Image (spheres, rainbow, N blue to C red):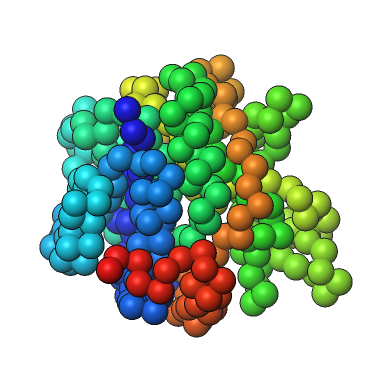
Length: 300
């Protein structure tokens, strides 16, 4: 059974100022998602599932269906504010849905095979998809999940500090914990550091960080749904709280329910958060086309 690629694309991109998920970055207006899908198809994924808001469905279909028809199966999952499908009989007013793990849970009735999760606005690199496909077809189990671990120095910006989920990895290559570091940056000498309330701390440039590229079986839906109900219960008066994938992963590790293999990659990651990132991403993609990593026109 071929694995499925689940793409988190329901965010509103408030800092970017428009729907960056469908903004064009490649020579023929390709989105960042196009490159992820192209890499996933070549790595052996059998289905692409977009997690979106229902009101985004038509623009998404108009962009992706003509390109992907006949190449790969597509599916659309809607992330909404309705909590009743999760057995929560209350309406909670919020400006945005409940976060990345809530988005994954929205797919629980549609995804029946091993799958991985990625962000729509991040470029992950060919190797990462090959390694994840290998894991999902030969190693994954209901108590054995994974994430792609990027070298921290291959994910930073030259334009300021960023947030990164820093992974602590044991001798077996499994994640022990993940710590959100909100200020990670290059120092003037090219070394990496992060700042927290206690000051500046060095980070080995080979430290593995999560860029939200996770591998699961459908068992994760049943494992994490009770956590989501508890999270909503505890945070119903906190409109900005979000149930993130690392929160669920941490709970699965601590309870002994599942381990997470950290699959190392040397791939360079890049993504868009701010409008100012667009020319940088366009330049990175131009270089990948120029060096033959991608054809100039992905979907002739």
